[in-house]
Amino acid sequence: MSHIIFGDCTLSDCGREKIKELKRYSWGFDVYYWFEEEITFYPDVLVMLKENDRKGNLIKFCITSKNQKYNSEDLLLPYDKYTKEELFPDENDRVIFEELCGNNLDILFDTLSYFLKELKPKRLRIFVTEGYDCEFEVVRCDLKSMLKRIREQSIAYSMIDSTIYELI
Image 1 (cartoon, rainbow, N blue to C red):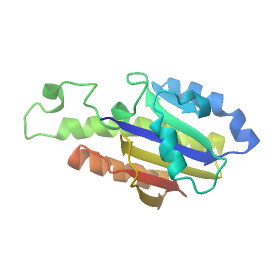
Image 2: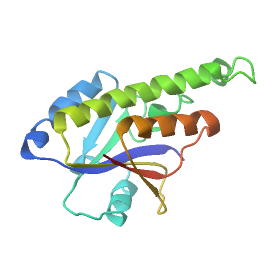
Image 3: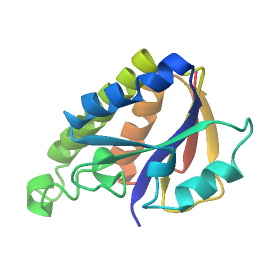
């Protein structure tokens, strides 16, 4: 099963108008943002959002990549971009793997920073999970803390806990 990043937010009319700008900006990094009715490739995203909806009437989104249009795996972990030999040239040496995980998360951080700056969501929740899950840990934090936590998990365990990040 692959990881997926998705979420919901509250946007003003001005923020809604900037969605196309976010998409264009992110395409430059091979990152795709899908909104509302565009999320047809993985119906469980909408199910998980509905199961965890506390406010209603939120704009739903999903983040994927050019390499994997229907999941977020290569935005988090570099396994699909590189061979095992490239990631771990010496079986006990994880330096290259850690660097490539960091590079992936830097790209994700950049596009999410743009999302926050340009769309100015009043409320933003980001879900990270491996496939369908109904038990999420909820963490209130800022974007840097979210990505630090994901980086630590991906490097240490090569997997990421199912979490809803409520960005503050």
